[in-house]
Length: 300
Image (cartoon, rainbow, N blue to C red; front, side, top):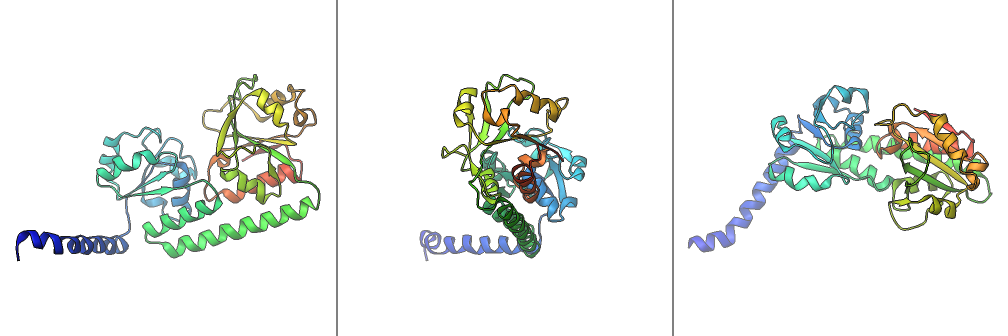
């Protein structure tokens, strides 16, 4: 047989054998050095009981507290590849927010898993995918089932509390400069974000209906929406020195906004509100308190 014919017929088979051998080795030898480049991924890996295998995280990975003791590789959007190489991870976790780094990392020879945060279903799928990559598929499946049960229970309570009345139109504010009370630019959650799932599960409707995950609106746009309730989410990263009461007072100055006049603005404070991961039921519980119980300040 000529060398050319050998290449044509046997080389593809060789690649297939190598692929399955590598997969088998991965299943037998799960990763021992995990680098997480996304807060949601960090929360997932610790939630699955693999925190001891984490060798590095980003500066935004603040939960659980044990994550703070891990090596900080800096900004999740601009990662120093020399730092990645020096850590020699056998698994790198990313999110759909910094998936652009995936190719660079894989070229360096490090396997990756991307955690998606678009909606609750994809959060669960991502947890299963991480569990499979780490050799603990059964544990991940059990944990996902627990989360699904929790969400279902909270959602059913919310629907019972709402009764048969009309759905409240809720606007979820996910970002603005809380040190500036001019409300020049406000970032809100749209129907293609996981916050839309939270609103549906809480028995309410999203006041922002454009088919986007997130959008920036002006004060004029906010007045046009005129939602029944506004929930402002405030993460702790970079927000020290601005208390919840001051934020609520800022909203009260918007006398042309019905929700502001009627005291229907709530502040939920804590990084957990911005993380689409295992603490999803906690966010849903907080939404339920503001929507159905009239709670206007929540700090976790």
